[in-house]
Image (tube, rainbow, N blue to C red; front, side, top):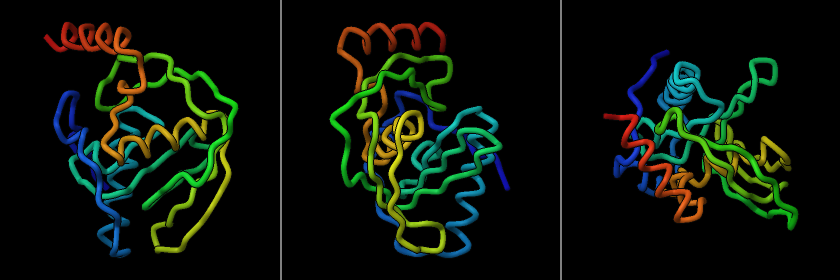
Length: 164
């Protein structure tokens, strides 16, 4: 459909807690299409409506073209494993900046699809990391908040230099 402008760190919108989707209509499907186009153009593997300044609980993940597109509307984590995984993360709103984040290795997530049907699934590894990352964003938690203060400060300084 359309590539939309991305909010860039430190835009205050990236700290906004998103509202639940209540209407499952063509506008929601159009938003999901725009998110996919915007994510692919960025490029990235995940994106939320918040990244484009629409503060609704919608996330799109595409780990690879062969794996298909996943839409998560009103996602919530139901349970997490005790085991953790370290993975390098970044954001379409802070291109070029990455660092290692520790998260639960496996999760169970409940969400609605674009028609409003409720689903629950288990995810582990990279998919679990991506879902947690995007749900954090929907909760107004930008990924760098998961870093130690020292790592976060260093990364923000590098970002500020890059932007100048």
